[in-house]
Length: 174
Image 1 (tube, rainbow, N blue to C red):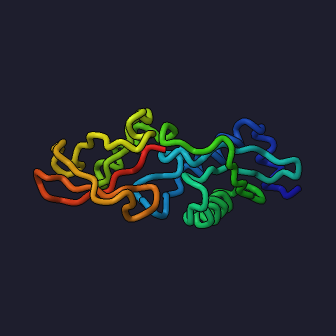
Image 2: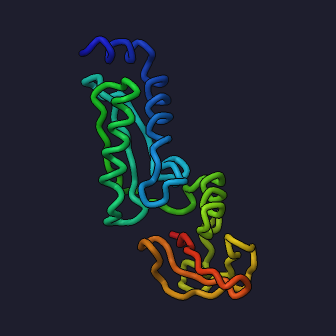
Image 3: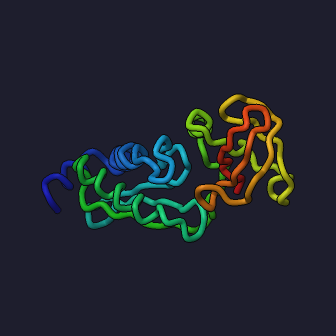
């Protein structure tokens, strides 16, 4: 074990886990850079491995999400830069990610960025594919219409506000 790893083990596994979660949680989502992976709910857990290295768990927002490889690389780099030993990122698929894991702060960051956030709890209407009433993230108007089931990424749909006439993405409830 390296001297740095021994020092971190001396901090105790719990403190090391908290430090790894803090550092990894600051990594920005590459598709929506105003959100951290902690805001998004993608960061799941961290632990000290038997070999003295740290391991962080992440869950994709949906199967095949192209951002996950970049997120894993960025998390490993952030952990290394913070002096955490031999970082490794593990992709966890179960339980599947849900928009319920997004933080309230993350929802507000989405709105400020111009993306309508998902409801805090997925509604039955959204789950069964029925259109939901969305407020425009630009003007706040609720007279909106869905233009396309898919927006700039597969996890978003494209909407338009009929009041201000601006198009906007909506992060889908999953």
